[in-house]
Length: 322
Image (cartoon, rainbow, N blue to C red):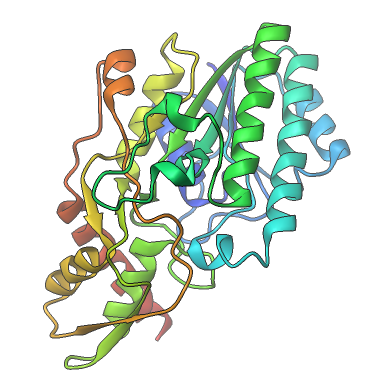
């Protein structure tokens, strides 16, 4: 039986990935600062600890002999956390410290294969100014100008892991995730991302009222359902492809139209009130040409279907806490 360690297993993606690995027959060790919030972990063992601390990481690597490590741990959140600028120092320091610890120890302990979750936030701002035609092909990440310190840290850590792979001959796989969403995603507290936050606003609103939406609502994004994120991650780890690759949807939508989709799902009569707020780049969409070529696969789960499931889940969470 192969053993995998999932770092960030208490988070949204990490908890889903842990469940998938267990289904595939792995022995899974989950690690995070906290247990999953909305569903029990499927991990065989779950360790609570701070991956920023060298001593904790050293003990972890000495304790387990593993076949695969999935490094998803990061200081992150939605637009309200990333784009205000107030959390930049923590985002840079905390995530970089984790990755410096993990890269060095992976080499020291000769870990056979390591996955790093990067982000679409690495792409240059100047390629994402037109909401109708953003350019996010993998090779476009350079010359670099991410729109946030979160993006800069992800780009640095990509280079860190790729350099260690080249010099120390460890196998590294890197995915640039594009706005992953679905049941189990944080939906309140300040770090939630757009799909869950908008579902919460609509679910809490009464008919005939309005909800606030940051920006003019014309900014565009694509959103990837969690199941396809996990499928793409596993396919990438099982492949021989060694360069960073997008794992995201090509179904681009404006934020206002996403809100309208959620309102239609809810069956309510609600209007949109666009207000000033952090929005990030004007347009972002996954470019899936490389993943099609490398893995002979790409995501195709309809946004409308995923949002129906997500809205239903968020609504149920609100009723539980009422």
